[in-house]
Length: 585
Image 1 (tube, rainbow, N blue to C red):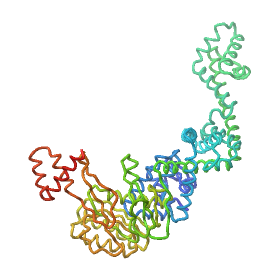
Image 2: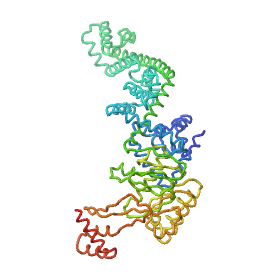
Image 3: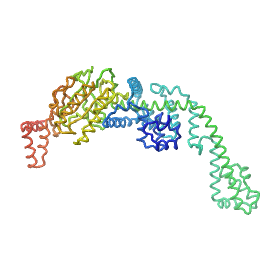
Image 4: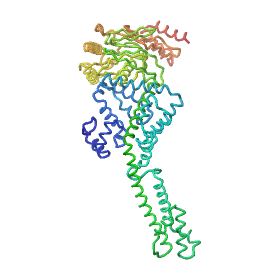
């Protein structure tokens, strides 16, 4: 396969990768999902991530049919990435994609559940030990050496069960030798690392000392001349001084001495230069010998090192996903062979991550078997729901939540709900409200939401306030057409609108649900029950909003203006709302 055959790799990117890595190594990095290697080669992280998502996700990325669906995907990955135990695990999370079939989804869910069982079984000190081992992974330069050291540390700490079980199959003795060899070779072709060979370290120390003396030969001469009488005593004093200061054997110093010298200064300088040259040669020779030995150790241990790298990377990813699942109390969705998207007590992941208070919501479209203890279950069989109700009532948040749940399930990940029943879809069409009122926006919106539902695949339509992009009369007609099209094409859909009354009659397989504002809090904040009421048209209850404006008016004139509006929406309702808010206080 050629580099340019991969999505996102054009001529410039191909040439960059070929120059920096070589074609074979670059292809290996793409195939293994190695974000770090691509970014180290000069590819921007975002671009590298997109290349690898398409290389590994392929057609499964077509699930995300709209920009808003892709935004949910990216934001979800960002949240999951917060729980990565290593940088490498974070890179692997960033290239997670929807999976192509239910078997793959179930397999990943099995892996995440097993990892979560392991993580749940660890006490606080054990968790700190695990995270400490993975911190070491990121603190060492070489990826292979990091993985080997992490594997050895986890084994030393006694982690051998559950998700850690594959560590037991590693040869610890071979890995100990390999980590020493990797440490020695970290400098690449230029230099063997310190500590790899004691003889090499000693030669380097000797060379450094001699080079220091060679830089100030006058000081050396002054030191050895003071007690010397005659040439022979000077030579002996000099040899002993250099040997004492550098650790070089006296005999080696004497071998570097010139047979003839014009004067004492020339004798000292020439001896030190010759000795430094001899030591450089000795260092180079020893480095070559050590390199050959270490490369032999690594060649013999290559299978064990590869196994350690793969094992540690897999454990790191599994534990990262387990920590994410635990943090948000996620549950395994149930996949069914029916067209359905249904959730019980679902929570919006983005709001929870932001620390917002979240009211769990139960909702479903399609043919479901969900049980809702102590509450009414959503009607079953309706393929489409038209969701109505109060402004700031959580309608868009509900659409986003359904998008999150469907996406996480098809990525093989648990979902933020107490129960979820999902049919696998081919396309998620999530379209948020975009307040741009012109023909261009209308056309682009129709181009993004209509083709997926007519493609013949299984589609989940999540469309928010379609009326925001065209005039109300036309919007109602077009929205009715979208609802009808969704039913006719056997798709699932939730459509948020304030035009429910204008959509009648709806197809038999569609229903209207409503979210209701219930009043004002003592702080005059709108109080909303975010749980939709099924087969009931929601109301925006403008008297609550007007009541808040009346109560918060800055002066008499402004208040009088809001009171005029109160007459339009029902002055008695406004006064009753204000009285209720004050009475609550």
